[in-house]
View (cartoon, rainbow, N blue to C red):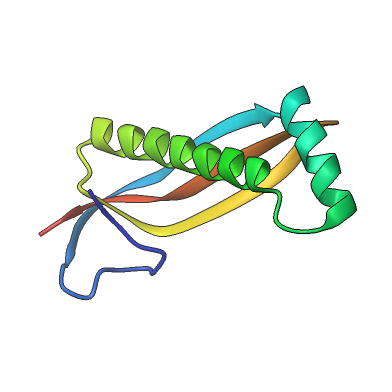
Amino acid sequence: MLLTTQDSFEDHEIAQTFGLVRGNTIRARHLGKDVLAAFRGIVGGEVTEYTKMMAEAREQALDRMIATAESLGADGIVGIRFTSATVMSGAAEIVVYGTAVKLK
């Protein structure tokens, strides 16, 4: 599966467009990670526990989008974008979306 944030692939021609595909996940904070994050808030520095959690959430959302595109017969996704939103206190949703395409 080829992926790009651009509207097309430089080395490939789009033969067919399947339309919008997306993947999402919602992650909640963990009490143990909150304690470490609070400590980092006092002394400063990157909150690596949350960085790792959000990176895993992005990968899971991306995997789900790719699976949806593959089920349509696509071999590429163009115009990929990520977005996030707070769902409730302590939980965030990660959404990735793009246009599934068949390449020549």
